[in-house]
Amino acid sequence: MNASDITVVIPAFNEATTIRRIVIEALDQVEQVVVVDDGSSDGTSSVLTDLNVTVLRHMQNRGKAASLQYGFQYALQQGCKAVITLDGDGQHEPKEIAKLIKKATDNPGYIVIAARLINREATPPLRLFGNKFGDFWLSWACGYPIIDSQSGFRLYPTALLEQTKLADSKERSFVFESEILIEAAKKCFYSVRVPIESIYHSGRRASHFRLYQDTRNIVWMITWQLIKRWLYLPGLLQAIGLLPDPRNRS
Image (cartoon, rainbow, N blue to C red; front, top):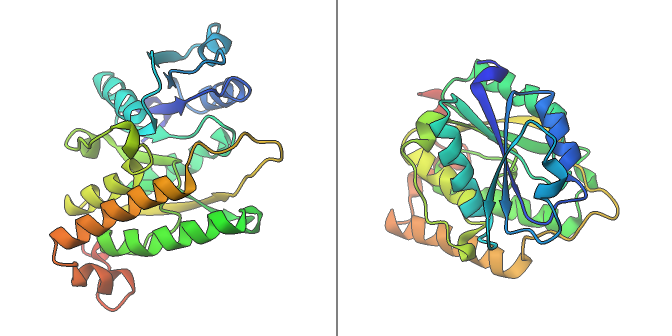
């Protein structure tokens, strides 16, 4: 797999101060970059008009899930082999894209998660606790260990995206990236990780993630997934290493 096979999709809501740099640096790594402007009111799209980037727009804010689905649909229509997603707020460095492509080349058919493991002490303590909490439950529901399951910097093989369609209402904006890992595991699409730096710039805009509401929505989705599978005890045992990791059999 090489850079010409990849489409980068960046969901953006009011990211005018950072999105231009992110797009320019992404274009240094790949040929096709798609920004989904999710009803921004700060001129996010206008700062990109002179760049070789595709801008898709929602006239009203519909949330991250709908933006990702829109970007995936467009990317699939262009015939790419994989889609890389990253955020437009500067938390993800586009120069790391090459690491994800290399990992995907070595692990064809896998999702690649850019796990924020380098300089992890820079992560705000509450956010770090939330990430580890989410990792445990999502690993259980997926049936194998996952680290930094909340990272939005990922590579998805198009074979997975072509057969996966999830609910994308605004209330499920931050459920999507957890749910797609569960649905992928059911289809035997597993994930591998590549370590990247944990970046939290001073003066960075407040996260769109609503700590209590979105955490509740994610927990409820995972709980329902486990209930539907009678608590999926084999998944728990695989996640904590008491049964073989299914990735070793694929």
